[in-house]
Length: 321
Ligand code: ASP
Image 1: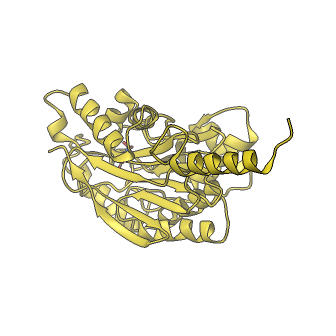
Image 2 (image 1 turned 135 degrees about the vertical axis):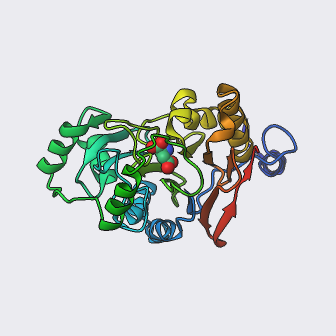
């Protein structure tokens, strides 16, 4: 049957209505956001700006997140990440880092020494090897073979603090608001794609060889380009036991907003640590594909930085306690 003008108008009218109202009836269908967005743990404003600049110039989410976290990696005043990070109890700075892209690819380095930008090495592991994680000496060999140079990451200030700590050498890796500022960063680009990275020198004065959550996919970071992304900071062991970042993304997959998903994941961490959760901090942040974001922590004192088209702001996280 040929389409006459009446049928055509009829069809156009009803197509117009379904498009406006959404297929399911009256709620408009949520659209994937294509507005650049950067969210990072703590007051990492400079890192977020560096990432946002990449996105603003039509760069992709992966490049943005890499450029962003490289800022604290090179900052001697950031005492939990890269250069200037606090050493382990033997006085060695060891760094952990991972990165994940929109295709679900990921790379990670753990227990790496003397390399300024572990996130770049993690990206190379992702892009140039069939593996996900390289550790210790092997990770360093791989970095050196790829043109990275050795650099001592222990600054004079960090060395002095460590020597002070040695006087009592109390091994009590309690992570509170004062002694850590690991960066986990989540980005979304103008194509709507997501990426994330997490990089740290880990818990101060940790046992030699200790690896936390930050470089472990699912614990310290998780990105699913069909759902959203999440990353965390705080006592790594608690996020390792609960796969906190993966959990946040799974809650979002089930329909929760990033904020609600972070709250539910923190509750899971709390329930997993009866009697001890009062003594440590965990902060989680998340974004979803619709450009929404959220964050939540166990203790008060956690904050996260957000930049989107509206500008940048430091958000004081709400907390379980
Ligand atoms: N999550 C990191 C770790 O346990 C520490 C931190 O967030 O400051 O290694």
